[in-house]
Image (cartoon, rainbow, N blue to C red):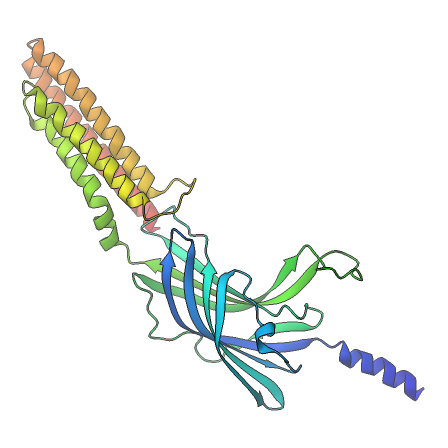
Length: 309
């Protein structure tokens, strides 16, 4: 009987899940790269655990990292438990949300797992005591609007070669760091879109030139069109290829259409002037200028307001 109880409770203790308290302290977020779809994070990570960790570098994995390096390892004990502290520099993969660029908000997530133990053996419990990032932390061109640490479960549709599993799947406890950042957009917006607005303004001036001056009536909007296309190429060089229609595409597309319409009505106005309908030509210019100017202004304002929301 003694042997039975020893065997039963002994196995229960061995199989008991280790709840590991885990926390982080973000030191810096930098090198946000939209072309390479990545950013760099430097942070301290600590774990308070029951099980001994023979090799600390094997106890941590960042599933979404392109690369990471553990710069410092401190192994100690705290209240009879193991206390592991790691200083990590990681290059994280990031799928940027570009629909509202440059009025975009980005959600960064850092996942941490222990690849040695599944959820049967180890569960992460977030350490929420104190701050999880440096209050002086600044991300150039951005402001941090939300910071949250939680835990989760990582599901993999494989048993990684363990043929004793009933199903070919594995579950690992995850420590999740979710950071929301919002771009300080207005300065960048005017830098990026100033060329486009100047191109439209140059084309719009056409309506105030007498139709008899055919060369400037057609030369200005054509020049404006080339300037707008060039501005679009410059902005696209800062962004990755995407099938998503962004505010950059929308506003430039509108500008292209408006300039084509200006060229078309310039031709109509010239035709009316050649037919001796000077007054009709002048009225056409004023009416079309008022309509196109209003549409362009309203469409821009609505697009920007929607992006800000």
